[in-house]
Amino acid sequence: MIIAVSACLLGDNCKYNGGNNYSKKVAEYVMGHDIVPVCPEVIGGLPTPREPSEIVNGIVMHKDGTSVDEEFRRGADIALKKVKEAGAELVILRSRSPSCGVRSIYDGTFTGTLVGGQGVFAKLLIDNNIKVLDESEI
Image 1 (tube, rainbow, N blue to C red):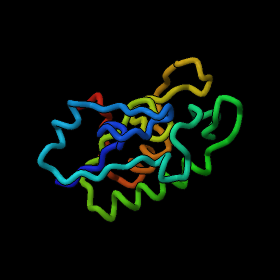
Image 2 (image 1 turned 90 degrees about the vertical axis):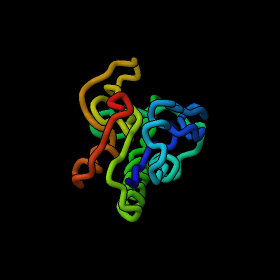
Image 3 (image 1 turned 60 degrees about the vertical axis):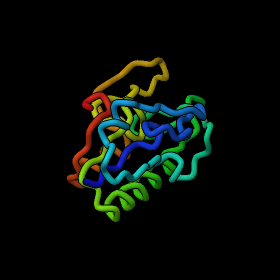
């Protein structure tokens, strides 16, 4: 099976703070499968490290009010293309991310409050009928 995975879950240092979210559970789950690492934020042109972002009234923004919505959406589009071209049957994404959150994301107040919803990339995958799992579901 071909599985696309948030690159940070595989140990790539592409997280907003320059680190990663390596998940042993995810790494073990995908072992023996063809893996397609994706980081829509980096693919969209954002640097690592970068300011944290949240979705505020439907627009992805930094805490200071700077919009990074274009970069997030461009990255999501390119990552979707990569997933489709690879023939991935499943995509495993990072919880709470404004790109990759599957079940919940931060509420846009930059206070750590979670709400139900999807990140930009997760929603695009779901809208394209691609099976998506949150890392917590592994």
